[in-house]
Amino acid sequence: MSPKVERTDAEWREILSDQEYQVLRESGTERAFTGELLDNTREGVYRCRACNAELFRSDTKFDSHCGWPSFFTAENDAVVLSEDASLGMIRTEVRCATCDSHLGHVFPDAPQTPTGDRFCINSVCLTFEDADGTQGA
Ligand SMILES: [Zn+2]
Image 1 (cartoon, protein in one colour):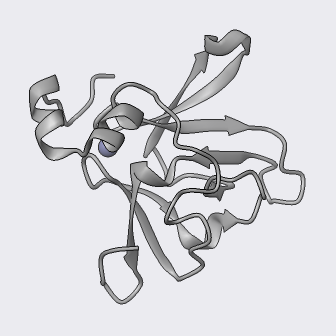
Image 2 (image 1 turned 135 degrees about the horizontal axis):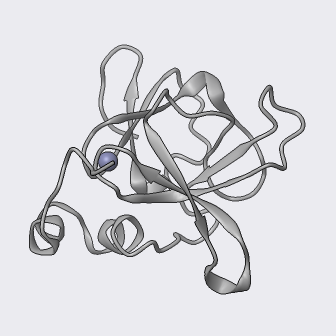
């Protein structure tokens, strides 16, 4: 499946900040406990910072104490999962299905949630839209 939103590297650099580019397009990771959406508990929708696709809903966010925003499920068909063998570990990478940007990883280590999964997502990859339509963090 090819992404619906495709841009050149130069275009991505134009619309993303340096940190956003490094995480979204180069599969980087923001420092734990630094994300502006980590403790956000408001009701609303989390969108891809790169393409604005709807990715997660606030009612699937939970406090995992891992240092990154965590969700137990993603919106239908919003993300694609693939095996990531970097850093000497086998992990499951989470990418945006719409623009193929890196978002984070998913781990099956959340027995307290309905799915048992923890989507561990970089805050810098997300924008938050309040239930009343206000954009921002
Ligand atoms: Zn996207």
